Image 1 (cartoon, rainbow, N blue to C red):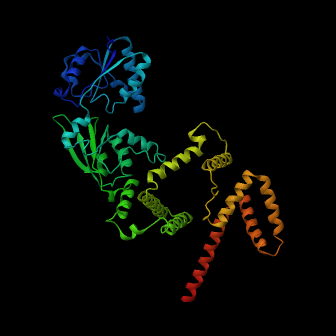
Image 2 (cartoon, one colour; image 1 turned 180 degrees about the vertical axis):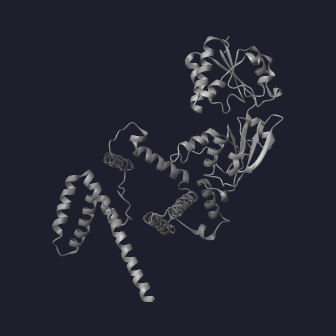
Length: 456
């Protein structure tokens, strides 16, 4: 027969005594009991609760939730080492209870066995109020503190949002207005600011309250630990996430979609991919953030459109595109995702050359070092820079030959002049393509100005 657990974790449910399970009542009666907090309606229902200890004092001294939960876990383990202990938490022990997660990790290290007695969670209390079926409605359960974490990690939190606006979401642990304000900033990244959200307070109790208000007002509502926020799914056409764009493109390509979009192929779209890329480059050149935002969207559209066409052909799917580039990034950055060390950007470039060479060897075919459709001036500069980096002797020989050919009167001389310019640009750290492009833009402006002057 197994020894009795030295630590019993009890879920107190949402509040009313009649929502407390019989097993939980029995455990609380046996004691001794340590409460995470006395701020729970059920505590005063037990006469013996006056003798129960709590962790409320730790809330006053902790500087962060992470520190608080770690301190609570340490206190629980300290008491559980000496005698059997009942640790009581609001709701369900395994729903949104960071201290329980910590205890499940740490208790075995101290030889402490754990038994868990479930309780009704905030989810169980909210669902009847909102008349929701978590499976049929595909509801996402989100911790508000995860949203706060995304904000704290900004601007490097892209892709970490723990929910999709295309499915309903129920957010718990919206403790106070500060948390609500930070959560609002994160949610506004993917939701329209006027989307109607439902705030539920004290669910499962007789004083439960429901308030519907726009997202931009959620931090004006009085919050406490028993508050949850429900966000409905938004229409694909109102969304701001990649999945929505995929659905829009799929609809355009479907049998009931747009005749023009349905006729397009990889070949027919080549010019548009090139045009959109050049327009994005123009926006970068002009330092125009609004234009760049729009043009990057057009480039992304081309990517998703090509992926959709490929899926229709049975060639690959969008997820293959994403997975392939992630694999490549991880493989080419062992100094970030592995144990390799590099000391400088030049060392990174040298390492990349080695990795790319290995990749080409594994592919068993000769792949161009740089795209053959790349502008010739850009491609020449890239190739010469690579030659100087990987085969300095060959680079020196080529440089000498180019200088010698400058005196000739032939096509070779013109080539030598061009290559000499590229060499000079590379060695000076100058982008030859950008220099020539800026000059052409200036010339174009002069010509346009002169043309307008003649017309007036």
